[in-house]
Length: 217
Image 1: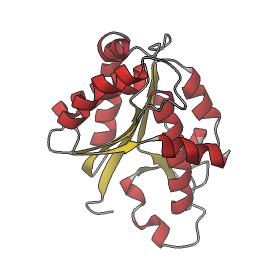
Image 2 (image 1 turned 45 degrees about the horizontal axis):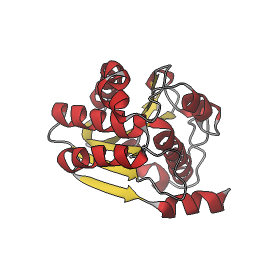
Image 3 (image 1 turned 60 degrees about the vertical axis):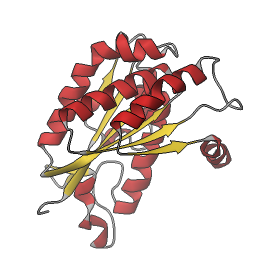
């Protein structure tokens, strides 16, 4: 494992957690890891870089280096009930009770700000367990109150604490064709300068992503 460069995945809000859950399904499959965290693959190559995204627990179980955040419990329950829901550390689910109601300020300044220290505590634990931390990747939407408001708050706080580590974001922008609410463009506008300021690389995911998800159903 010597010097393996680890990445911590942070998924915020409903959209961020749905994308994150899919990410872990796909990457677990690539590494030959089943839904209990056991290796069931058929090639040594599958384990060669496994420590980039996974911690190795007792009994050769692989646990995602993931922090799951939302301001309401519903999405967390869905992830837990999903095919790989038992893979995650129970302590790494951090959620509020009231939601952000698609309000950027609630995610960034009030409800989200109250939860942010709990999230950073888990991020620190994950960082400490990394032999060599390469950086962070964040999945979130720019349209929702939690993904946009709290997501950008987390990104700026992590940047402050780990200024020399890579910050990579995967941000879903709102689309009028599948919009939930009229405030999505405002949430996105308030978020963009935060991404420009605090991330090293950002991938903007657009309408195309919705098409892919829709066709996969």
